[in-house]
Image 1 (tube, rainbow, N blue to C red):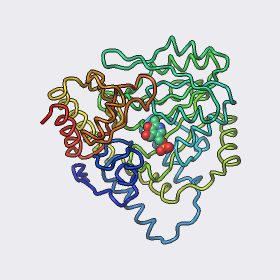
Image 2 (image 1 turned 45 degrees about the vertical axis):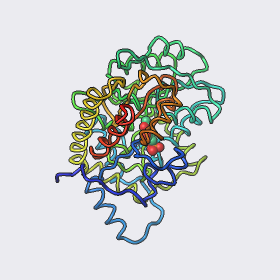
Image 3 (image 1 turned 90 degrees about the vertical axis):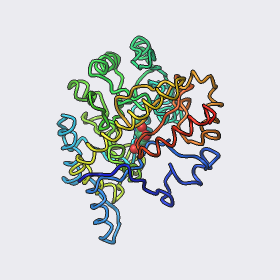
Length: 395
Ligand SMILES: Cc1ncc(COP(=O)(O)O)c(C=O)c1O
């Protein structure tokens, strides 16, 4: 079927974090804003997902659920094989009600208080709290930024990896917020340094299906058998198919000992046992029947990025658009506007009346940037950009 992603769907009254007025007021201190912030999309979900959920809802009983069925596990492993070329054993899959809680528990399982964990800011900020709230030490291997392009700083990474207290590296691939789809060569170099220094890799690949044309995502674990055994891969259908509220993700751990340790933390120490009944149904429908939707949504996202790039080029010469390679998150360098972070944030919220994610929340290197979620009908994105243009250019 042909999806109409221009259609505006009213999300009010659905407890949406992105749109709910009370939440906006609490989070941004104003609800008079057009929201293009948190990473979910304003598009209809794949029809097979909607149909499967309606069918499940009509069954009328929503008791405790279980995920270790061939249908669920095969949906995950077939997706990994079909879309990403990774053959996995169904036993490697461990359900988690989210990647963020899983990362917290991975930090608790595989590091001790006082040990060090490398992250690469500007990066998805819950990585910081997963480390620091658990009493571990955060090592910031800041991405290198030059000519509006991001690369890894391998020299600094190696210095940090050699520290005997460093035990873990949390990779974001593709990278939120800078939009890089890392090449196999780049990833291999990082992975080799980790192997040499006995550092466990947590590879958060939640955005792995959102790849723009011309780019190829490499699953970290597919690079070599050694990498596979030294990597814990975090994956989910939540970003791919816009079902983040269903809280269903999977942690894939090929190494048996590591898998046992994590299973022990998640089920025995934290009692995470029973997945959301609707999440299971949605995952199966999405992975088995959602590809047609995904192919169409990717084209729409690309068109939105193209619109945004051109709008900025033509109207906002003091903002630099960072060319994205994946995700639906645009990363704008606003440093040449000459505002400090407080002023930039206030400008977006109270003058332009748009709710974006301020770059500074993504840590060092995020200062002076704004992240815009383009996973919305183009008319909403246009309205957002017109608001910014009108106040900046005084019309
Ligand atoms: C890199 C990354 N990891 C994890 C998440 C959230 O994962 P979950 O909702 O499964 O906790 C996000 C959401 O934006 C993300 O960008």
